Length: 186
Image (cartoon, rainbow, N blue to C red; front, side):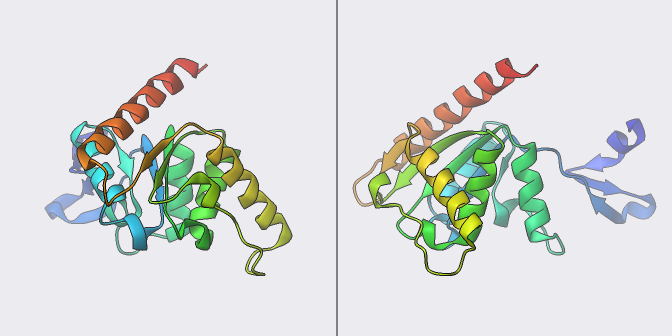
């Protein structure tokens, strides 16, 4: 392991002749769950950048993964290794089985989750029975969504909200939850 540490350069393990052999990924502190089409270039991306500036290790799919990575393996591994999750709920969030799977996994693993309701009220979020999900998955997604909706979170409306305040409030909530998660460790 000491040899591996010596050859890590910006997250990449270098062999002789400085050829990249493979990428090592440290566990992430914060997993950012979001519907990409609605929030990747706004709240999710900004939050990832802000948490990175605070020297935390956030995971955001398009920023944390590289070509050749196995999508579900990488995402599930990031959720497992994270201490805190941020669920960015948007108007079409519940249409994504990926979002719902990630949320359910975080809840089932008893991760601390900070909900951010962006341009949507918690009461507007529902998992629809549109025959895309098995009965087991449907119930799993509904249970996770209900738990998240019953967790104190942040509400933000992009048309009239203060983006810098949202980032401060969200990062404060993440840091508070990270500290509490560390205190709970056996």
